[in-house]
Picture 1 (cartoon, rainbow, N blue to C red):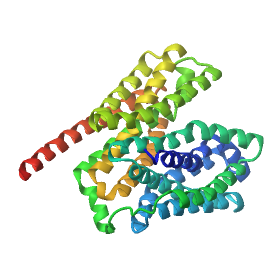
Picture 2: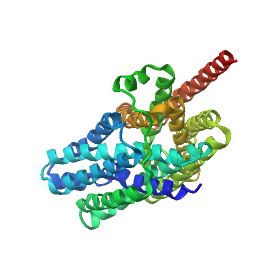
Picture 3: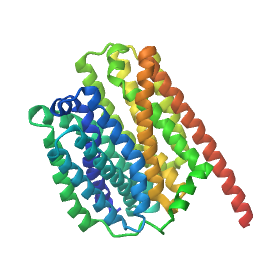
Length: 392
């Protein structure tokens, strides 16, 4: 692909803007001390970001359908610059919450626009792989961005992180201006018609698969450190090694999922990955008692979980290609809602049971996602055969 380097550039920028979301978890104590609030109160910054991202990003995308993909990418990065400036200049916890909302809108819209642009830069048979490449930037923010942010906050000042994000976002605007074609995002679709897509069973099923997949993954990931320390008897150093191995498997899984979707099709890749995801969670809860067993299972879980990402997004785009941006924004909303639900459900489970419970909850949730996906693909095949019969 002659545009391969542009797709990787979008992935790199995605890494930068996504770090603005996840880095806060790694520096929450520093932020709390600076804002003179408790860590639990500072935790609202994560919740506010997720809610703003889930509900605000789709609204921005819906109201900017006339904007070409280059301008939408530039607009989202300008919002990132604005949010970063607000973070480091405006005093008080209230303004910090406001800046998180602005950053959530910027990063959410960029993630949607970047995946849409990457799919258009790739040939039809490579679109899922292009989306998978952009997702690598998202997952790298969790694996690399958070630890780097912690080092910067410890060695210097946490505000320096957002100063860097602001400067890099400003530079990225000029890069996008020179490299990304000003293609239209498709025909303008009225807001009422956009919302009507949520009434379509096939789209609701696709979003349902996304929600339960993220819930199953997130409920385990949110409490992975206490799980490893208590269930597998790992020490602090072994946990660090396990999380590094987890991160490597995440990156490989994202790319592999896009490659296999292009090679053998989305139904087999997505459903197969979901079932392996379930098996990995069950095995983690039942036989992962030593690091030698737990680390390979942890990598299998991460690999299978993230291999589903490209297929989930490609499926929504395939169901409604005329509004691909809207479908990807709804996907992002489901992800954020899944994150919020996972943290809440996992917290309740830990209070009333053991840490192993979160693995079982995750397995059940992903199993539900696999069942919905299987039914969805089956129904879509029947509809396609019926429509082809009518054409004949």
